[in-house]
Amino acid sequence: MKSSGESIGATAARFGLETHVLRHWEDERLLEPARDAAGRRRFDEDDIVRIAVILRNKAAGLSLEQIRVLLDEGAPDRHRVLEEHIAELDRRAADIAQARAMTEHALRCRSHDITQCPRFRSHVGDVLSGQARWLLGRTEPMGGPVGRTEPAGGPVGDAGPAGGPVAVASGSAPA
Image (cartoon, rainbow, N blue to C red; front, side, top):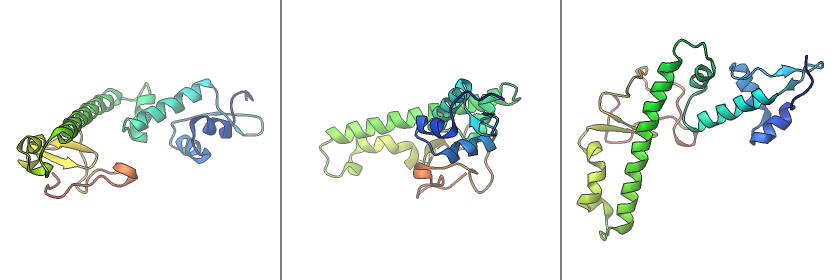
């Protein structure tokens, strides 16, 4: 057993994490740190890179299960998971571009009630017409997400803003 590498406390502090997060990721088979002679975890440079990959991908919206597949070069569905995530990132980028256009319009619009401005309303025309269903966290074309199936109750384990569940906004119905 090797004794080099960082302790769990030093590794967690490096990334601004609590140690229980690293233990959880180990339980989820995302990390496999070596142990020293006393059985303490020792994180080497490869472990540090894996933690950075996990953090970056969590920030991009991947679940721990998706990240596990990403990190497993032998996973049979690795390409499918990655292609689905790219499609989700594209949807989110479109939502961000739309939100930016709305904000820029609102900044310059002379209307006292922005929701009464026809040009501003055009930014939500697809939602108003039922061509898109708005979910907190993402907008999807009617017919549901591309390449992803969900149980009848909605996404399992997905979280919306502030860690809350993904929910359908008023005025639309789940698919």
